[in-house]
Length: 593
Image (tube, one colour):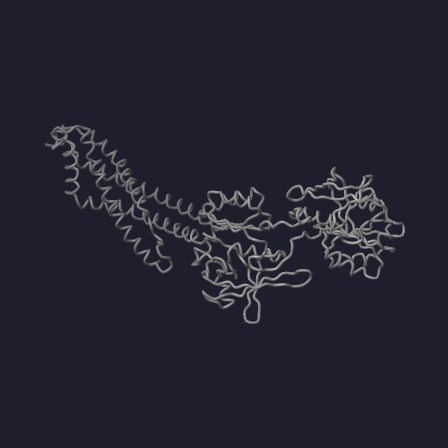
């Protein structure tokens, strides 16, 4: 037998000879390892279960906008390339996402939500992605209207057009109902195309594919303000009364110089002028009508106005007004138009008549349109019909274009007002959240809940290592003491091994082999003890867990790491005892004899 094999055999037979002592030491080491494995198993299993529940619940992977912005298709295309985003779909504005469902003799209001292929909220909550003329309901919505899968909903879409209410109806088949985890709000999920069609109809745009009627999307009129001119000044009460219920929040009595600066022409000496504005937004036609009603019988001149810079073809300040012949006479004006006209003409100071191509810098770029110079302006600014400038004023808030074929301005399709976004895992929420915040987009996410899990994970890890360090130190001390004592007790036997020809290096390995053997036996006992206790714990908590989840679990690589660490600790503990064997001389055996 080779010397190395001889030392290994002697070491193993010695452990077997003192099997009671060996068993006690193995159990002592296992008693240190098994609680550590159990603690790590509970830590890993608990955190894994909590993370699994968060990952499986798309609500925790969702990032939602908190405000309405203007998102174009390019923005969605670029954001969708983000490596951590799992699902992204645009949404319409809140005012366009409200529909009603006819139930018996009443109408119930629901929120319409767009969806598409791979929508995690639907797929991970027992739903099926709806196709054309199909929908998916939340459980709250299904219970509220009392429907089941396969029923057809009578959906009504309403709008206000030219002062009257209009509506269309369509049928949507319910193909699935989401479980409670998808949310407690009553919502209807439908394909994005249907949601956009609903928004178009509410915007008074025809939807030919569904035979929903509508008109040409002409821009609405926006005014900078409204001038009110009276023969007598208003008392404070009457002045404040013009603000209430008109959409106006500011009224100012103008000095004649200020009136001239705003309009470009002089205010007649027999009139007093008030400037009414909405300092937070433009003034709409509804405010003009409300003021007309309030001033009925006061012989007032009510004049909406717009003031813009237009290239004609050089930049020029243009004042937009339209007045009846009677009011023109009262203000000393002579305009070629006496009512709102759908023509593109302008009166310019010291410019000859003719047709030119004008341009205006709108929200989404320069808008070019033809315009006719039809006379000389009576003031220091160019003057154009109110409808023309009020349309261009809208172009600063909404994208408009000039259609050369129809020779008219048209509103373009609204960009999207929001989005639904889900990341791939809860660990990706922070990165995508930060990306959107850097773009100036206010969003919200379940960051607090996710962070609490991470804090719990870090806390349990610290506790584990504190306990593990104490246990490892105790195990090392016990193993060192045991092996060192063994060497002291077996000096005679070890010296005889030296006497029969074994070298110091070969005898050095005697306690190393024993430490290695006891470590392997200890880890086997500890793993068996851990597996038994983990099985009991998981059976006790089985009713509170989902299928496949465990409250106490360690992956195989953790068990292998524990075994390797135990072996390393055992070998390091045996070094002192092994060094002691090198100090034993063969003569000690002779002296014993």
